Image (cartoon, rainbow, N blue to C red; front, side):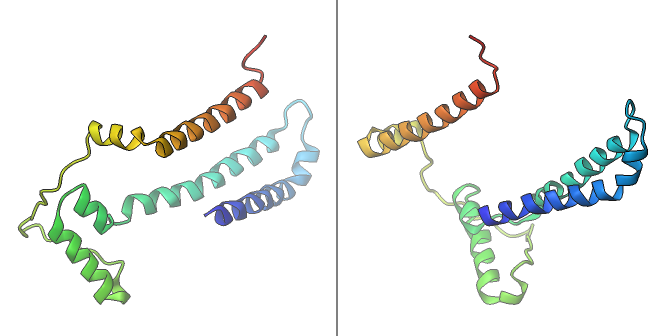
Length: 154
């Protein structure tokens, strides 16, 4: 995932250079007090920057739920089994999912997570140390970032 994100940074820089190069003569000819074509450039860049986010949002909203989520959270065992069968048996049509509205929903009687489970998990020294270490790391990053911006004045 990091490789994909890192490939967008040079791509964004190339789009910015192409946009500025396309408006280069107009930017040079503009009045220095009112650079109208610079305004066009940043609007184009902001608009194009929204495209990857819109594509990601579309895929995140339309991707089907995993069988594990269907079974654990929605507690619909039959639909989870049908999703798994669809993926394993029909490899070519793995992206095609259907919902049978008239099917009988079989609910699993599995215990839900509780506050007691949370306390029992973090009562273990190893897990508590991990939680404190991660929380402190994020706090240190946030505090140094806010301090570097000059938000905290002394």
